[in-house]
Length: 273
Image (cartoon, rainbow, N blue to C red; front, side, top):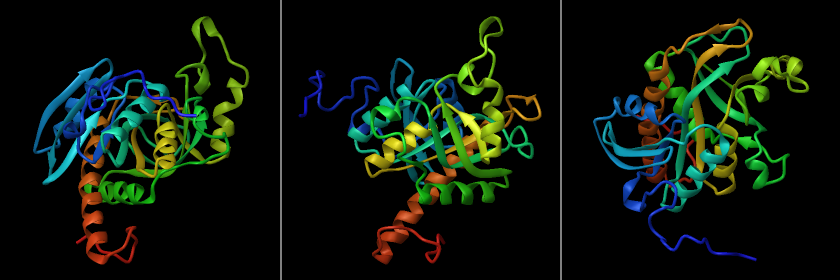
């Protein structure tokens, strides 16, 4: 059984207030609305298209490639709304651009983490599909992010991300007045032993929804804290933004190469030059 939305407007989306002409086919998804200015600083031009609640959207060009950015706010519920409504207006590729906590000792503050897949410790994606469905990043997006980080000379790591619904208890941190959630003492150690690289709050929902809808998605985050070493600094925020911007340009080149070769997917046998 299917039910139409209660929103009578078929063009402008209810939460994001964007229409099909407002966004490019690739959209960067930071959590913090204030991060938008730091992202568009790497573009050649841009225009603010919408701002409603936590969702700020700008569209422009970078190296001649159309590109958009929409902030999602904190957490998977609001990120899923962004993916849903952007997909409805024609977006085909999503790249989360954010910050994270690393849990492997060799990962330094300021390094980048490019997500290849995610542990779905958030509840939003459970509303869509069974819990054993994988949250996998699209390999074209991962390849473009890796190539961008290499070209820019940034230190990066690839691996599995854990996405939580809570910044405090859900990530093994104490709550108010020293409250500790059940299993909090062992959480980070268990994830570390499973070779999980980092913790954040949106990637797994974005990856899951994109996969369900046949769209591309990936994530690149700057390490702000290392939970193993205890180091914390808000350093290198712009690196993820610059890497995602260049990756968008590289994805456009991949798509052009695919069209010329008459294939559906880019692979290592196809050049980007």
